[in-house]
Image (spheres, rainbow, N blue to C red):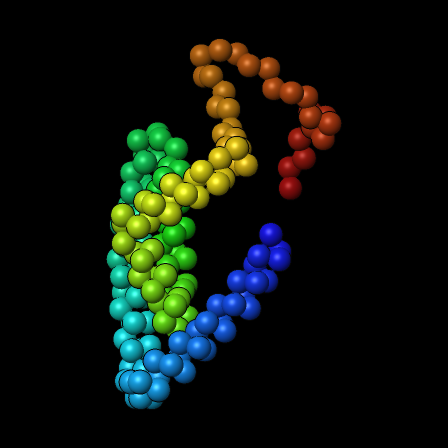
Length: 149
């Protein structure tokens, strides 16, 4: 895993430099910088609005008593999209804007779900039944004495 991340952190900047040099030589410095600034502003705006919607869906799912797994994955992908969109570069901007397209996000979420299936275990706390008397486990720290401070 470390090797893959290291390779990613080496190859992406090299690809971005290559694209900057080639596209910049075709468009010129001014237009290239303008594109970088506009995509960062547009990406931040789209990320903010979609992130707000994702948070509302997350809260609605939890309010309905459902496990918000799908909503959490979607929120993480929107967060990732925002992170790569504020990073200057044509390749990262393309990936970021693609992650802001809901059908593309669904494809990526499906792929990630298949890759992670069986690797993640969700544990939920057991709520005590209010009708039944449940015996609390003895605490080694609680001797029954109360100290008022």
